[in-house]
Amino acid sequence: MPASGVRAAAIAARLTALGLPARLEEHDQSWSVEAEVPESLPAESWQEVLEAVAEADRFGLLATSLNGRTLWAAVRKAVPTTGDVGGPSHQR
Image (cartoon, rainbow, N blue to C red; front, side, top):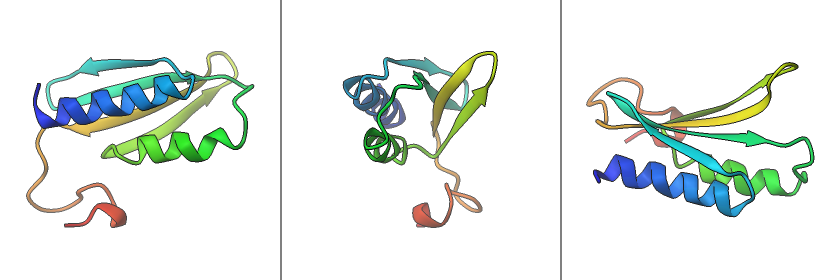
């Protein structure tokens, strides 16, 4: 598995260890990790959840009244050589 896949798998494993069973999926240019976030997730757990997804190139939380809350993270297969590389904390 390439380094990007290992990173994505590590994020998924951390989320699962925190009680958020995560799904890992490979795409053409990235890996994605998704996990459903229950309403009952304790506030103190959010810090650990954010530390886990901060290892990704991008992450977010999709919240809808129909489908609940889904946490997602994306890890690029190839790092861009110029331009946006994940925001200010990821500048190289």
